[in-house]
Amino acid sequence: MNFSLDEKYLSIQQVARDLCQSIAHIADEADESSVVHPEIHAALKYSELSRMMVPAEYGGSFEKVDPLAICLTREVMMATSCHLDSLFALQGIGSYAITVAGSPEQREQWLPKIASAEALAGLALTEEDAGSDLKNVSTTIVAGPEGLRLNGSKAFISNAGSADFYEVFAKEGDGFSLILVPADAEGVSIIPAPELIAPHVLGDLHFDNVLLPESARLGEPGKGLDLVLATLAVFRVSVAGAAVGLAQAALEEAVRHTRTREQFGRPLARLGPVAQMLADSWTEIEMARLLTYRAASMAKDDPAATLQQSSMAKLAASETASRVVDRCVQVMGRFGLVRGSKIEKFYRQARPMRIYEGSSEVLRLGIARELTQIVP
Image 1 (cartoon, one colour):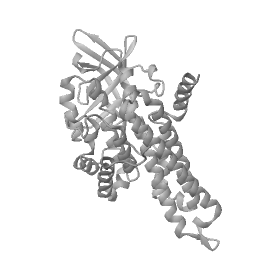
Image 2 (spheres, rainbow, N blue to C red; image 1 turned 90 degrees about the vertical axis):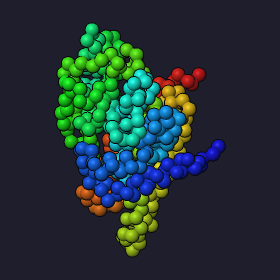
Image 3 (cartoon, one colour; image 1 turned 180 degrees about the vertical axis):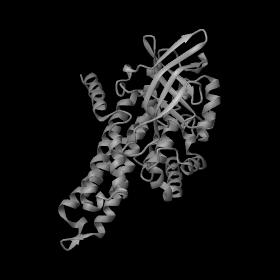
Image 4 (cartoon, helix red, strand yellow; image 1 turned 180 degrees about the horizontal axis):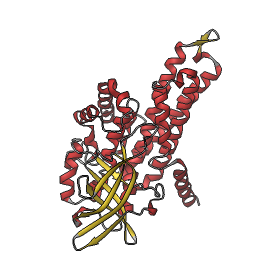
């Protein structure tokens, strides 16, 4: 077994580090923004890292989308800027259904623009009464002589108001379909979403009798849920990568503090309870990192077949990030409570990771269900 990254992946990490270094001076400003930060967007374009979100045929970095490469990139990005991490991740999350099920025309129109970050993508799943329970969506698609009629609303949609198109999940007859909706389509409107504890480019979408051609479909009618699951199979593990990056950054901030601050005649890092929390945090981060890299490597070959491994990685890494950041606040004492400090920002950013792209509780249900099926 080889636990080392090869040169290809080390090179990707270095490009991501260079990008993060170039935007470090505006990272805090961007992370408090609820709209796309133009300088962050421009830096992402310049880095060409969005190319890994599409196949080489359409301007991508690799023959097919590589979950490990994305995971490693998000690990680096999240340690510096959650705004950059989100902007990067959504290029893949919001376009993957086009990659796997789009028509040649859809792919030609959008994927090169995704690769260059010229266009921003969005995936519209969640509704007011449908979060983890996607089968409870009320947005509808009705096919008729004129085309496809889309009606309904989506809530808490990342990139809403900034994306150039949305992949919209909706009920159609007795099934669920996915449809590609240009942001400027007549009848599409944006409503600002509530402000979150960790600001995010977010909004609600409203579709008022939006008329689209039959060619706007992504895949076959009634097969939309399969495309959503395919997207999760590739990108869920990348959330784990981002969580590991956040936890590592928080720990390093706490270590810097505990090495220099003295209490009871010695550095905090030399006091037993503090040393224990630092050691536990480092150990848990390394455990989460190994599980994450393994799951991402498995997803390279067959994402759908290894979805539960990705779920386990996302569960473990996001829960680890919350525990680690909480410990870091504790060992830093009052300095960990200062609004605007790095550790306070990490504390706010860690909490949502246990909810989006599969809450911890829902992930546990799926993992347990799989376990009970494979154990004889």
